[in-house]
Amino acid sequence: MEKKDYKFWGWENADVSPITDEYKGINNPRDLYDALSEIWCADTCAPRMRADWTEDNKTLGQCSITAFLAQDIFGGRVYGIERAGGNYHCYNVIGDCAFDLTSEQFGDEKLDYTDNPEQFREVHFGKEEKRLRYEFLKKRLKEKDE
Image (cartoon, rainbow, N blue to C red):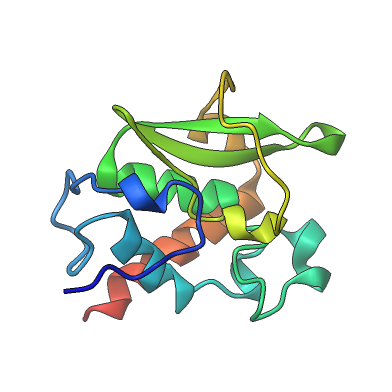
């Protein structure tokens, strides 16, 4: 079977297996990306970016909730690239596998995935709206295979 080309950073080596069987059909991060591509929407986008969200840029404003959901499924750690305004763009590292399911939102901009600080859900989910978006994304992913 021919391997599909993806646009997210790290997709070529995103071969880690899930640590849970909670999500049917999710066998690696590419499967998760495919499933989330049908779920990401303006309601899961960060409120400050929602006006710019489009079907053509589905990953916009989805990074932290996506990275923490990927962590639930595959384990590992979440790291953040500091952006203008002091926000962090989140991505996943599991052993020697690193990937960023929402990197497409930056177009041709090259992000630096080295030496970034670890991010923690307790901090991110201190913002209730973000925790609620994460819960909604998680619920929709579980419902997808029912």
